[in-house]
Image (tube, rainbow over all chains, first blue to last red; front, side):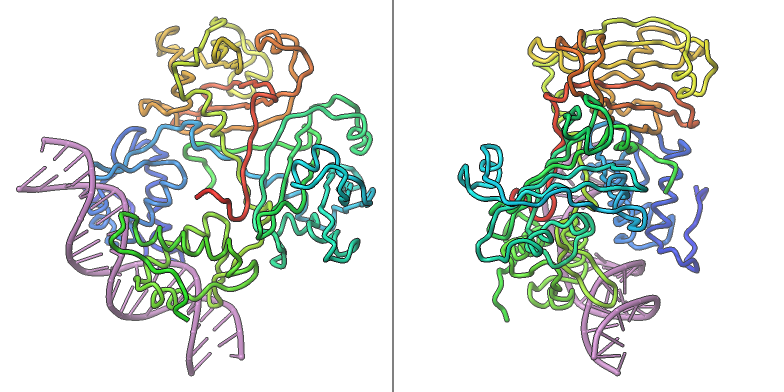
Amino acid sequence: MDNHTTIDRRLFEPAYIQLINILREQIANGTYLPGSRLPSESELCKNYKVSPMTVRRSIKALLDQGIVSTVQGSGTYVKAPNLNGVTFSMEEFHNIFKDKERTKVKILEALIIRADDATANRLAIGVGDRVILIRRVLIRDGDPILYHKEQLICDPRRPIMEAELEVTSLHGLFVGTGETKLKRGELAIEAAVLSKEEAEVLNTIQMQPAFRLEHIFYDFEDKPVSWGRFICRGDRLKFATTVGISNSK
Amino acid sequence: MDNHTTIDRRLFEPAYIQLINILREQIANGTYLPGSRLPSESELCKNYKVSPMTVRRSIKALLDQGIVSTVQGSGTYVKAPNLNGVTFSMEEFHNIFKDKERTKVKILEALIIRADDATANRLAIGVGDRVILIRRVLIRDGDPILYHKEQLICDPRRPIMEAELEVTSLHGLFVGTGETKLKRGELAIEAAVLSKEEAEVLNTIQMQPAFRLEHIFYDFEDKPVSWGRFICRGDRLKFATTVGISNSK
DNA sequence: AAGTGGTCTAGACCACTAT
DNA sequence: TAGTGGTCTAGACCACTTT
């Protein structure tokens, strides 16, 4: 009955983290199989000598990890791994930017052009209105790995060039500078094959599989400020994730 | 000073949800700009007449949504939207399976073959060992949209065919049946172009951009049970998400 | 009726940051 | 030193499920 690990209050690790790991381990080793019920919250309180809020916090964490599901009035149940709530993170993508030593951003072009249909549509402006086009390539260890093409609305109230380039600086997009005037962004991943232009910039051949990450950013008035695309060779990027109990905590 | 919305205890909506929405709205309308500090937890307790745990729950939710960050001893700060913690869900993908009326799974082939290099490697068996190959196509409204190719280890202790097909039934993979013996799975999205075979199954032309979702599932002894790939035309699938404050709650 | 999870209170002590 | 977030307690009441 008391056949379980205990929580060590002397450790640096908080009680609710210890309880998360205890329950995760018990699920991982088959003590509680998919579909079975975990001990009730009040039982866990008694067994591990912690307060209800601490138990709830631990269970909430397992809930967020997609490992269990709760049914009010009934109990907490171990979920079978499934593809339902799976998410893929951009961590791999993000890592490209992390070590600034190895990566350099090269601006290929920055000029004012007239908006075409697609651009006018996405930026909610008129066809032929002026927009700023920026083409950048991100180079790691001398190797071009990411092509970024972006169009920004021309705000007459703002000074044009240098400052504008900072509105969505690549670094700002990724780490978040805290000084932005941007409220939100919409992102989408598409499968694509490299066009001739894209292949040239990325120093490879046409028709190779690639990811396109399209983004539109909005200001606090919900007006579009910029839209663009990251293009990345498919063999340089992978979105990976796990379901169920992964071995690394 | 008391210039704020209040929490209505008569509503069905819990207090912590109301507080989440109040803070989200204030961030969305620019009351608190990116980089600025939210009122302290004790201030929020006083202002909205709720207990510390309720305030913490609300702030934890904003933290999980990537909208704010907390610094112990300093405060809670509004984050500028960035691509750092962005995740893409498989919801769109999952929706393909949801209405069972419109979608049918057709088994193209199910037979025992000898493992090749790639299969032996992923399933941790020997080259030439017997595996079960299943090729399925998912059809929606008469239109083939998803091609699934999977290889399962032959477990001599299990009866072969019918039962085996259920180990990773497409429906089971997505909704989670609760009866699985699977502990965890690893997933990865790759960009690809359709091969001749894939294009034929999906009733389209070669070299079209496509997503490949590779998966490996493990049992409770951490032994691989199956590996396979979903192949989907790029024009039938899009992974989308938002950063910052999205307009829909 | 008994048990379960969902919400919430009104405090406490600690680690950390700012000044 | 004062203020902040991080952890935790020991209860309470409610909505819901199970028997």
